[in-house]
Image 1: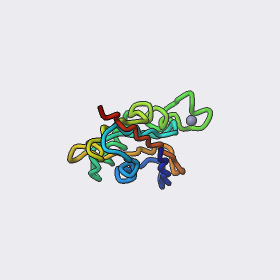
Image 2 (image 1 turned 90 degrees about the vertical axis):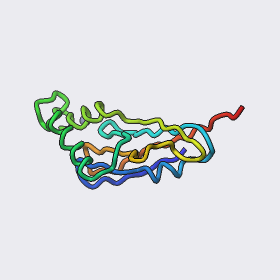
Image 3 (image 1 turned 120 degrees about the vertical axis):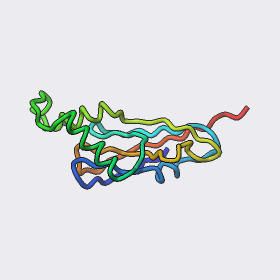
Length: 132
Ligand code: ZN
């Protein structure tokens, strides 16, 4: 198991963690599970083009605006972040083939921050396939 620590720098941000996830691969074939420990962050696989990353953050904010009368905001004013995290999911599973994550040409593993800046932790587990 490998834990990736991410220091986010703004309230909403996308961090490409592909290269760090790759370092958790310790065998030839199997699967990787990448999981965030937090309720206001997400993990997705998509293209890391700068304009697209901005679009993802902006359009999620259009769908789930901040301070829009959420009940949870009575506690810590971050209901929008929890809802965005719920929409995108907080883990991904990636096949590993010949010692590398089986990602398409434009696919990257992206960590989504919705309530930063904070220190975040992502757990990466590699499960090696039993060769028969
Ligand atoms: Zn909260």
